[in-house]
Length: 121
Image (cartoon, rainbow, N blue to C red):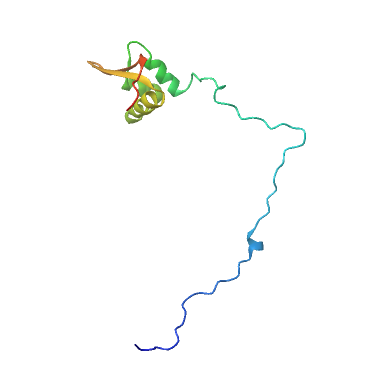
């Protein structure tokens, strides 16, 4: 084996870190003495809003005659795939309603029945 002489390190030397130049001072805001912190509103106390798109869709789905996807698209301004995703993801899975669909001459009708959907296995 041949000795090629002293090896030179290709490492760079670290520059000293000037921590004082990198830190910033932030004032912490403390509550005034004698004031009580306000609690966040709990979700149980919030009332259901009737003017939301979700509330409109659920009201339309509760009708005994049912509703078509076209009617839901018109009521919400959503595209067809968004309405179908809402029906599957929110109405069926998140809220647990039993969403029933039936094919008719005028298109597929969707409605919510009284029974709850069976639990997924």
